[in-house]
Image (cartoon, rainbow, N blue to C red; front, side, top):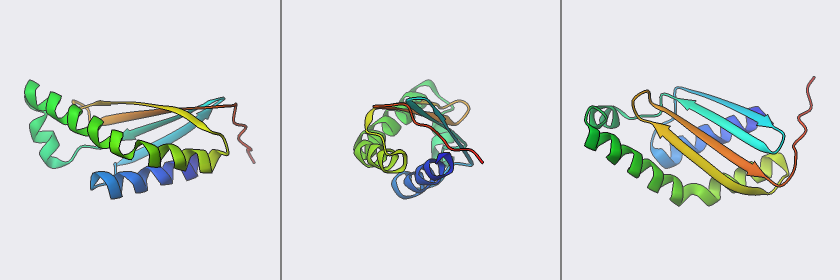
Length: 114
């Protein structure tokens, strides 16, 4: 299940943001789905991030893009987990090029391990 979420996030980033992250890890913790993405910035965003104004610009742009794709992301997490997604929280650290998504769902998710 975590791998399916990871793959869905990678596909979303590639299709919606224009490029995929360098690394993605997904974790299910009871009623939370936590996804950590490394290497998310484009070369142009890395250049912008060299100034305070640029950091703010990149953060605002990324927040606006996620707002547009929020429903699609929440729907994908719900389909994979079988639980209703209640909320999506996200932030990006432009200095290190990492983004975190935290999805809250309506019940604990039990991951079957082999």
